[in-house]
Image (cartoon, rainbow, N blue to C red; front, top):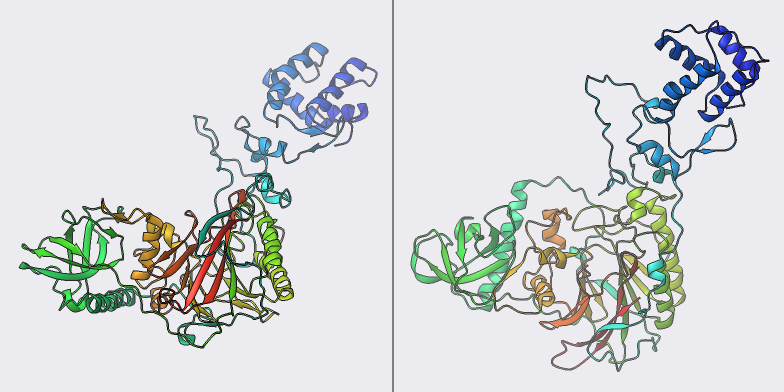
Length: 602
């Protein structure tokens, strides 16, 4: 808005029959001051004056210094209270310029009834009672995207138009524990973690026919098909339990009997709430129990560990046919042991580095932890690098707010190019596993591999979950946080195992499944047809990788080295990664492979 001149004021007031004299300096200066203070031009000021004198039933020609003071106090001061409180003005009479600090106050001020947003909207009818305008909460969370390859759409806010945050995380940069070993396994203190031999790791799927290697259509499954899959899972595990524990036969779960019998079925909850000792229900298979359910009395069990979806076998009695009083819980049976595929020389050691996303702190997308992982890669030069998502985390603040200046796929492609070039230089094989939290990938479990044409053959994109053979070592891995989901649903007896994390990991082995929980967590969308094909544990692996938000660990469970490497970034600070040493062994207790490992802070 240009500066208001005396001539402009004379012309505008003359339109309403108000005669002003350019020589009347007091009146002209006062009107110019009104235009400057209240950001009005000559036309607006004359309109305000005419409205004022008509409200007082005074003649428009009766203009005086005293009346102008009343005009300012009763008309202009009320108008200024509706304007933004702290606008930035370039100079007297110039236009108003808002920045990111003043615009939120102008937009969201509750005192402005006809404020900034109201000038751009259709006025609504107001009844006899004035009501405050309802405000939309800031920074609404965006759980998932409806489109791929682009930033999510968010409600209007200044932050949605701001450039990406390029400030490094202060908390990450100020950490003092980088490089500390927080967990060890085997002979980790006596081995060399730097690659010495020039041999390479041979990586193949455990079974090519059961390998999920391409996308599929999901959200089309029928309830009948889902029921068949769940029933087949009960009957399959029932055979393992019957053979291992030498059970003669399984009885009907709801059949009244006076003698002690053995029943088998799936653990369920009798309500929509969390499972507890009083709400446990056993659902039998169609073959033995016609799908009937029976409440379970656990009062006589000294030790148990149960969760919804678990297939178990109980010994007990059911006198009335209304409740099964269990007296013994048969232990779960792990899957069969893997057989050697080829003969590997004893000195062919494979060093493996495992890292799980997110690879950037939650307050930015600068990937500082991933940059530090590059340094450890160049230092140790492992034979194999296993990276598990999320790579573009849906829970990152910049992803939720939509402030990224590039698409999600471009961010992922750029990081894959960096990893490919670095690992090719040090002759390191790479396995990349997607995650449910990858914002640019299919939100379904089992999850197909990333759809990406890599220029480097040493980079392999696999599904979540999958089972791989690295030389003679079988490695099972899933990036879905199944341990956290199980921990929220599992119940255990008073004298159960004190090693809760190990107990949760053991459920995966005894249930022969990477995700045995049913119903699943709200964060997981399961396709049950594909779950039956691609989420089963075909063998008892030598190494089971189960990254989780729970505390990191590396421990032996029924001859399997279970590893939770933690996450490379945890919130605004650094997390952990793991390194493993796989060496062929002829020891009877090593199953042909001797594993050593460490969990290290990044």
